[in-house]
Amino acid sequence: MRQRSAPVRFGALTRRGRSGRPLKTEALSPGMTIGLFGGSFDPPHDGHRHVADSALRRLGLDRIWWLVSPHNPLKLRTPEDYDQRLRQVDALASGPRMVVSDIENRMKARLTARVVAALKARYPRVNFVWLMGADNLKNFHRWARWREIMAGMPVAIIARPQDPIRARLSPAARLYARARVSENSLQGFARRTPPVWTYLCEPLHRESSSFMRRNRN
Image 1 (cartoon, rainbow, N blue to C red):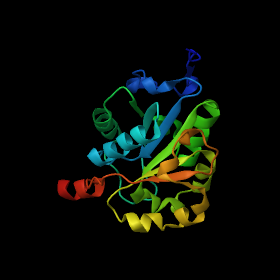
Image 2 (cartoon, rainbow, N blue to C red):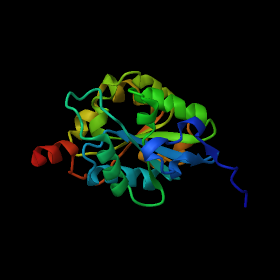
Image 3 (cartoon, helix red, strand yellow):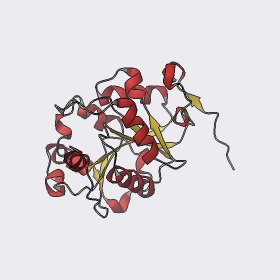
């Protein structure tokens, strides 16, 4: 059996200061397939875990990185305390193949495209897949430099109950209609040359962050 190469490490992007516990996310081997699941997770809930579990199972990923964002520029409201959200995601994303990263906060990055570019540059031989729920596909065309994400790595959309039909008719979905891969053709999806994306139809999990915030306030 062929052995994996020695793991690559983040170097300058390693955690420092009071949150200096080592992250298992920050050791990857060439050839691995990693799902990147970004969001403010305000608050994190079982619907997020449903997205991660579905992607892990359907796409045959080695790991999923939960990229906890300090702030979502498309949302006007200020999110809850970052360290609190990071702890909540850490509790939700249990399991050896689920790992939580604060790289966006450490990079002081406001754009997902910048984080994606940095990870691809540091891990040129790792296969990344961008993951998001179908509710985000509706507004994906409003993300800054969103086409760079589509051009940079495969994208997997997981069905969510918030208006799934409109999500599949969104500007991004229509523009990249020819790049869509059927659910029956997912073999080696993470290693395909972008732009390429797929829509995974899964049993819908109704929990959402907006619903939880309304009931919390």
